[in-house]
Structures are given as structure tokens and as C-alpha cells.
Length: 354
Length: 248
Image (cartoon, rainbow over all chains, first blue to last red):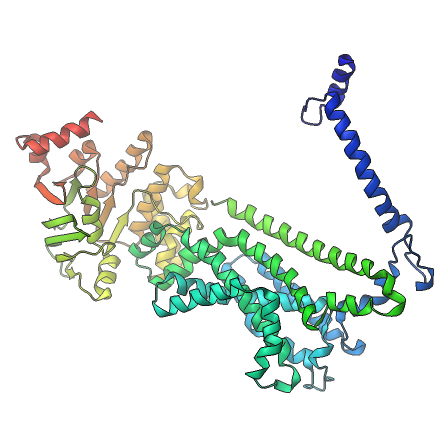
């Protein structure tokens, strides 16, 4: 008996030399069986029992109906945006992707900040007018038709970029001890962090219209954008403030005695280091805010989740809503996994000089 | 340019926080091209005194005049002093996110607004002088403590200061690296530069200093020529201090 166990041990050396005894083997086998019991039916449902092509009539309850995705992919991507105008969304998504890629890959920080500034302050305005149309002979598409996954992507990219700059400013003001201003910033941050995002979004939709006039029926998306951005900037400012606090006083003094002004020292000595330290928490926030953009569906914005719920409430698709949720989940998991990979690669680069 | 004879003139400088007196009516003068060592037991206020000279530390009463500029409530006076003064720290304080070369060119390009070619030329000149030119593209973390402190010296020299302040430049170094930094300092001393150094290295002080100031409890105990300081051990407090230093 013991001889056989030691033989097994030898065979299983690749498992980091864990001692294999009969107790361990039993537990492993039971766990494996349980896993198979769950995994096999799932694979059966999702892969070889699934309907991959054809018509909705061929779908059945024993397998996934992936043609739901195929038939509704346009709506999931673009919302209700008209087919003949959807090139505008494609164009914008491509533009945003290129800018993000540049922000990630360029060599100098000045260029990086420049692209981030464009993304945060120029692109949202440009996007609004391009999506809305009515200029350059473009067809007018009111905001209630905007939506889909591309909107989640574009909306959160702009919002996070804007939140980054506002958050940085708030962190600086809060750190400065500027009496009333710092106190106001602290109240704002605590307020934003203390309220759930959903309630803020409802506030933006239902309460704010009493204070602002409706700019050609479209200010809802603008209000949502600002509330989402301000929510993000509160968190962003705390992340950046953490970074600012961990830059040692000696660094500021070294910059001072070299004759750098307070502004120069902040721009070229303190901020770069603070952002490097804060990077993991900032990336964490980017992932969280991107996912939070699906909360727009709770206030009747047809983002990817809203659109998925709308399409799967049609009679023929009703039994296949699970497929829709899985699809959305998969897309978000993939994007967030990509973001984590980017974050890890940047952190590795920073390690070179830390 | 008219050269003032006095580099530093401190008159009855006092500083207190709460009811603790950190500096008490401290007065001393430093001549041009003079090398002064400030020593004393820890907590005696020597670092605070040094930091008062370029406005890193504030004080309550008294006056500080450095290179002809008197520190006043006008922040420009401190800016003025800092533009003519260099300072070295115990913990080097190199900028970890910049390479050795960038550490030296940063202030030249931002504060002095030199072109990048000119800044690099100046930086390379001083990096060569402290013998770390072969490390110019590395980040500070890749260098030994002694090398880092030498880079910090080069970074200060790039600004072409008339006065250098050293705050225990060798205290954070491993013993075998102390000498390479002290060699650079001695080399600097020989080339003629006003320097004020807070240090515990009495052996170095002996070779380096023209004048020694011994502080204790925020007061100057003794201020004398270096020669006299190390040989005239009549003063019991000097004797006691030298003894504690030697026994370490």
C-alpha cells in the first residue's frame, strides 16, 4: 500500500512535491467528479449541444441558442442607431481606440498627456455633434437612439479621461490646505463616494431637469455624462492623493533647492512619481467605471445591457435571454482582462526604476 | 561682478516649536571660499541651522544673509538664494523616475531654460568630474549609494552654485563607499568653493575644514579654526564630543 503511494508520489513530482497520501487522493477525486458533474453539462449546453447557425425555430431548450447573438449583433453594438448612419459610431470607436493605443504606447509623457487631454475635453464635444448630426448634411439622430456596446466603450473612455483630470485637480486642492476650497472639495468627494452610482444617475435623469433647460431634447445624456464623470473623479482624486502622499518630502525639497518653482516641481518631479505609485489603483478604477457604464441601462439608456434586455423581450427570443447575458458578460470579461494585462505591463515597466 | 567677502552672515538666529528651543541666538559668519564643518551630537540643531540658510526651514527671530541676499518675507529672496546655492541631502534625493542624465538636466531645462543640447553638455561635464559618466542612462536605483551621492553632487554642481550646503552627505552610506564621496568633496574643496558641511566624519573634517562649529542644544558651543579645534582640547565639551565620536 505505502509502496504504491510512493510510486504515485514519484509520478506526481511535477505538482511541486506535495505529499500524496490516500486522504489527498480521495479529496482530489471527489472534487474532480463534482467539477465534471457541473462542467460537462455546461459544455454540453454551450458547445456541442448548442445551435450555432440556422433559424430561431431550430433552437431548443437543451442547448444554447447562439444565433440570438448573430441575429441581434447589430443592435447589441449600435443600439437603435440607424443602419445607414452607423459608420459614425464605427469611426468614433476606431478613433478612440487609436488614441488609447497612443496614450499607452508613446514614449514621452508630454505627448501622452496631450492625447489624454484631447480624449477628455475635445472628443466628447466632437462626438456629441457627430452622433447628433444636423451638420454637414448629416441625418439627425436624437440621443434616445444612441446605444449599444460602442456607446459603453466611447462613453466610459471619455468619462474616465475627464475624471482623471478633474480628479487630479481635486487631489491637488485637497492636499494644499487652501481653507474653504479644500474643505469644499472634501465635502464633494465624501458626498460622491457616499452615494450609490445608481441613485446619482436617477438624480441626473429625474431631478436635474428642473434646474437645466432641455437643450434640444438631448441633455439627458450630457447630464448622465457629467454625473458619471464627477462620480469617477471623486474616486480618481482619492487614488491620486494616495500617490501624492507617498512621494517623500525629500523629493520636493530636492526640487526646491535646485530652483524649480512649485509648479515646475509638481509637473516634473512630484506628479509623475505620484501617478506611477497610484497606477494600480487608477487602473482598478478604470475597470470598475467601464463596468459601471452598464448601470446606464437602469435609466432607460439602451446601452449594451439595455439593448440586450430589449431584444430578448421580443417573443421569439424570450427563452434565450441567458445567452444574451452570457455574451455581454463574456465581452466585458475579455475587455477587463485586456485592461488588466495592459496595467500589468505598465507596472512592470515602472519597476525598472523603483 | 563684485564679489562679497562674506558668503553667509547669521545674526542671533532663534527657532522654537511649541516650547522646545531648537536654535537659540545662533550667530556666525562664513567667508568666501571658506570650508566650514558644523558638528555636534544629534538633536543639537545643526541640520536645522543648515536648512535655515536656504529657506527650507523657517525661523522665529534673527537674520540670515546668504551671498548678499537677506531672507525676508518676500519669497523672491529665498528663490534668489537657492539659485546661487546647492544642497546635498543625507538620503541623496535623486529623482527615481529620471535617468542619471535627466536628473542633472531637469533643473537646467526647467528653472534655467537652457536648450536640451546645452543642458546635456553641462550635465556630462559634471558627471565626468564626479566619475559617473558611464552610468548616465541608468536609473538611480541601479547605482550604489556612493555613486548616487556623487550624482547628487553633479546635479548640484550643474547649477553652478557659489555656495554648497551638505547635510550629513555620508551618513546613509556603507563604510566602504564613504571615501569615494569624501574624495570628490575634497577635490571640490581644493578647487575653491564655499562649503558648509554638517557631518560626523571627524577624520574628514580634519582634512577638509578651515573652520569648525560645534553645536549643542541649539547653541554654538565653540567656533574656531580647524587646527585649533582639533589640537586645543582644553574645552571640556569639545573633549567630551570628540571622545564620543572616536568611541564609535
